[in-house]
Length: 229
Length: 298
Image (cartoon, rainbow over all chains, first blue to last red; front, side, top):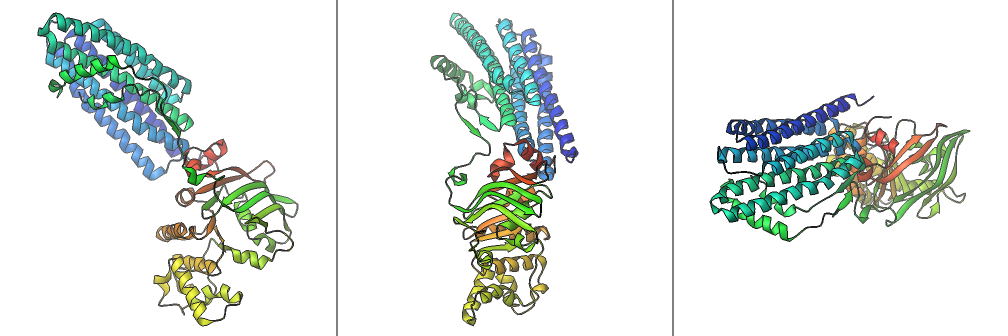
């Protein structure tokens, strides 16, 4: 095979993307778990570990740029490497969402005001499951799977709406908990955005396999400015 | 950071409840898709290759190629060694006639007229379709005489006219500044890159419509290569250029259209895929093209 070096590097990068993905999945699950258990120490751990996610993302980006410069990837190789740049950006932002959740756990501390833990757990599990399968489809270039996963986003949105109504009702009943409730809204917002970003990964899977650049779902575009938490 | 956000967030969540947004595919483009400027069906065509097969004796070196080469564009022929791309290129100005036993089936139309018609003057064809070769091959004569050679052959004798043609051709070939003080030195004294640009000046001195280039930069250093490539971009506004290259990055950099050839089971060169260069190098439609441009075959 005349392109052993490039093939080896691409496989290595795919492994690195999966590793970064698992770091992000773990960060999200740990942050949500810390929220449910009001575990500030665990949240601090997630918060600080975000640096590792960022470092991993930049290491992958650097490797991709070196391959652009030294291997001149073309066609499928080019699409794959360009897609990796996009996907690691999505993953890093998801890591930021986990960090944002951890920050909220640190902020609300040991407060005993109730949270809709069941819904939040289900949202988290669903989003992380979508992410996990989306990355798997990304590596295997499973186009049917890449089309299917974004449809599951509706489930996350439904749960989001349930939490929203619950929190609104609670705030109306007890204005004392408005600040706390807003924090919880930020948590579910971050989880909801994570699921939205999974769609972007699926779009890149379709791009690698077919060359088609498409937008599967733009329903939350106007929220993009609010991703900073 | 988030302390200032909750109020905004609430407003936004409420808006989100109010306005369900469409959940459909909104936009989609194919990578490599280009604007109409690369639509072969809409461009004026300079050379039409019509079901062309080229033989050396009984051996069919190139098999049944049909393609349209657009005017004022650069078309690259790529493919593994022995796929017939140079043979095909040489057939565009009947250079293959010089090889005994070589013959063709099919047609090559220049502006609609078959260059293989019996009434065609081959010398006239080679004036209208010039050629630049892999190794710079200036004639062993002065820079001036190299460029003036063709025009003289076509009967131009007047010194002032020849002066003008020589200067214009050397300027167009981006080598005037390098040679204007040594017009009467031997062309062989120039550097490789200058020699190749001199050969391009010599080719364009006879005002061709098409310039064929057979790996014009493969014997040059990287800077000279880039100069030739830049020059091709300038020349295409006046000429139709067809280039054979082994260097895929060069094809990707310089050409507007790319044709990929490979040999079939009978060891005869066939056209596998032909389309806008951007498409061939980002999203080729044929598996063999993909394997070749990504360097996994050939």
